[in-house]
Image (cartoon, rainbow, N blue to C red; front, side):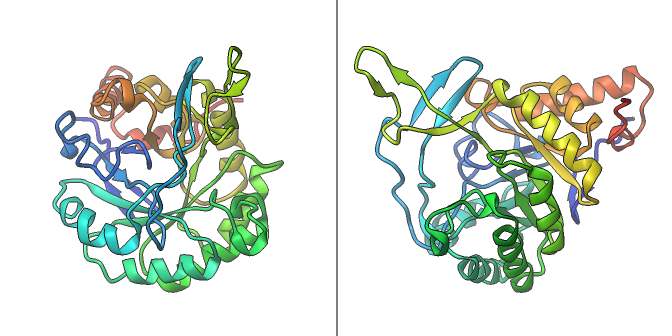
Length: 303
């Protein structure tokens, strides 16, 4: 028997495969296609203090080896989430991590305090790729001090594990990783999407109404692997790898460079049950190679 279980930042997972925020909605959308009990967990779509309608369409466009999205954090807000989404999520036979974002560090803490009172939430993933409205709209995650302050506010307000989700759109992601470690984060998830755009040459316009969007999918996997490897060497926090994971081999690459767990996102759009297929592939790989505990692979890349 192969042991696929892991404890990520204080969250026990039956296997290291988690569905990524923004790609599985609030669970209900994917349930007809994948048994939630086959997953390590899911991360909810980002919720904000107040409801958001998001950006105007077009908001998604397919690109070579990936996709661009500019949804704009559309969500029902904290109260709407607790009233309309959590009753369903609370019944799922898997770990549920709630992704949060807010305009200020203080409001991040207020959201965390409210969610700390809700039974059944496994942890919080803090989307520090959201704009800091106190700083003219610059992303929290692009500034070490701002990143640290958000994580400090959240950690002060909750007893739940706090996972900082890092943006790759920075000069030095290691500097940001160290900042969230100093802020008290329990773990890191990385990477969020890369900034990109697509152009309609006939209309001479951007395909996305927002002009730019977030690039995800296989195209970003090499970038994500390199960043996970760098951060793993620099901090002691567990890492959840994200970026173009579509099969067990992809997941294994992330684990070898230092990720204890992985998130699957864009691949779910074309293969809805990919999150269930990957643990199966991991088990087969371990059995074939005489590996009893998959966590023994983490960070074993030879350079």
